[in-house]
Image (cartoon, helix red, strand yellow):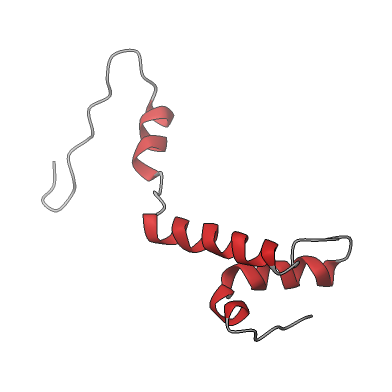
Length: 80
């Protein structure tokens, strides 16, 4: 094997190569990001951003409210 190339990963008995590759490439979401989104959902719901999502502008406003929830808490409302 040439220098600089990683050794092949061992494949457990009965496992397929795509199954092993899927486990290696899976990204984990940090607890901070998860907490940010959960708090954002709660804040957006309490401020009625998640009501009546029948139009694209309401959906985009709801997404912004979830992501930028500190502004909503400070009563800085925005809309698209």
